[in-house]
Each structure stands twice: as structure tokens, then as C-alpha cells.
Length: 227
Image (tube, rainbow, N blue to C red; front, side, top):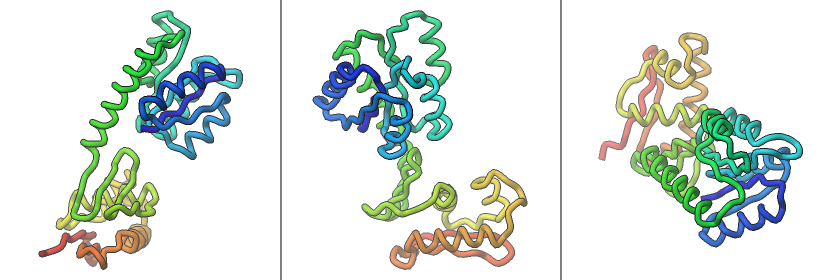
């Protein structure tokens, strides 16, 4: 599991990173909000530990950005010396998964991260779906063919996920529009057909026995191998 740390106290940041690394976590640390944004975009951690008060921003602002960009795919843990109940409630209501009270203790920190790790593992187990050689990682919006991650855009992933969940069934264009684009009638047939065509190439269906075709004036069908 990869953990990102945003802490402006360099000594504390190094100590926290050491504790986690000793338990097998991959750790990346930054001391400024702007650089931490870059870290999250580049490394995409599974969880982050955020200091509450920072020289160039606040942990709440960072969490709001994470939730806007990544939803709840990244777990957020606050590290704070603010012990007032209303502060803890504010953080949890704003979307934090947990909090750590300073001064930090090694035992409590590792126990809370282990609980986060269990929740992430359980979510991934529920959200990982396999169809023949294809494996979907829904939280990360990643699709694998064997061990190869296919280079899908987020919209292509959503389209593929919908089609595989409805494989061997004719799905109408209006159903695809509603499920994937959240729209009804605002996209042209050509736009959807173009997405289908690109997705077919990226799925490498000619090598797997699956087929993805447009059905004239009706919709689309993803067909599984017959043997």
C-alpha cells in the first residue's frame, strides 16, 4: 500500500515515514501543499496522512481537492494537535476516514493505518471483476488483459465496464448514453460508434475470442467466446 504524507515538520515527517516503511508501506512525503498536489497526481497513493495546519494551506483544503479529483478512492487520515471534539467532527464530516492526535504514537499510527489497509483490501476484493482474460479494477478505473494494463481513458473504462457487465445482451444506444454519459439523446450515434471502435481496438478482441459490434439501428453487443 502506498501512503502519501503531508507534514511541514521535517523531523516528524521522517519519523512517520520510517514507522510506515518498517511495516512494508511505500511512502512519499512532502512539506508544502503545492508539491503534495504534484505527488498525488504522480504517485496516486492509496492513503494520505495530512497535517491540519500548513504554511501554504490547510489539510481540509487538500482533502477537498482530493475528494473532488479522486472521490473516495484515496483514504484521508488527519494528523492534528487540535483535540477539540468539534474539530474532529468537522474533519470527519468533511470526508476524512480517520484522524491521529499529536504527539503521534507508533502503535496507534500503525493500528489506524492497518485498519485503513483492511478497508481498502475489502473494497478492492468487492470491486475487482474478471471476465475471461479481462480484469477490472473499478476503484482505480483500470482494466487489465492478463498482466497488461490497457490504456483506456476514464470514459472508455466506464463504457467497457458497462458492456462487460451486460455481455451477450443487446444494449440500446439510449441505455449506453444513460449508463455511461448520464445523458439521454445529447450525443450523436457517430460519437458513440467512435468510442466503440476505439474500445474494440484497445480490448484486442481479435486475440481473445470476444467480439464487440454495433447492431444496425438498435445498439451494441459484446459477445463472449462460444467455446
